[in-house]
Length: 319
Image (cartoon, rainbow, N blue to C red):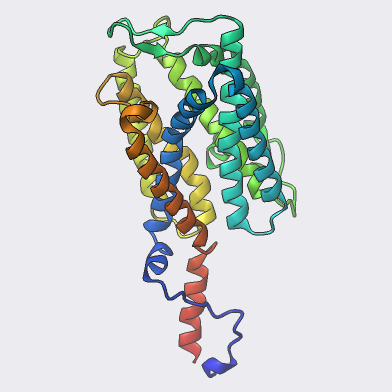
């Protein structure tokens, strides 16, 4: 059979850009998604500080509502989009904006209304250890645990962790619905919000001096195992071919890795550049631009280049 007899629909169209060709393969598919998600965690803090400085107390909540509304619009667009790659990225950005605009700033509002003071660092005079809004966030743990029970028992889940619990703890509630179609934008948005929320609360309870405290020996042990876990997940991530799977896998991987970064910052091992706009503004701007370029490149990566390469090899074999 000649190459001319092979349908053009099954033959991959190789892009001419060498950089994009490189990004189609491991480890770059997973690495790029990881870097984008990791940087978004830090830039989320930068965004909050920037909004508070720019809009002040008078308009901060209106701007936060608008930010969350943009996330809701992105979620709507993503849920209607037929493409898995675009839908997944829409879901990630929607979840990130919804978290910052509607969730984090709602805790800021509650802390201000209730006049809750910041928790000061006993080891560094005049430095805030935990802001008031995060003290308020700790009260949401009951809602998190309730929804966690639902997600753990959900028979439609595709999450490896929940499936592991269902299989090993005999928690299956039935077989997945045959023909059930997942909406990747909705799944990714919810994953982004939920993993961020879970890791925030885990850190806040670890930092609580009545439970452990940031310098408790158990905290050092948890930091060690969390870092090992992040490395393990990262090594799995960089072996992935499918960009949409890599994006969804990179969300917990990057946020778990960022949790180790947060604990190290709590120990004052380095300067937190994300919230010091006057000093690190130009650097943060460059990081934001680099992240935007990385996100644009990630969107250009096909959903499953490995399948295309396999078809290409088959075409060469039969030609």
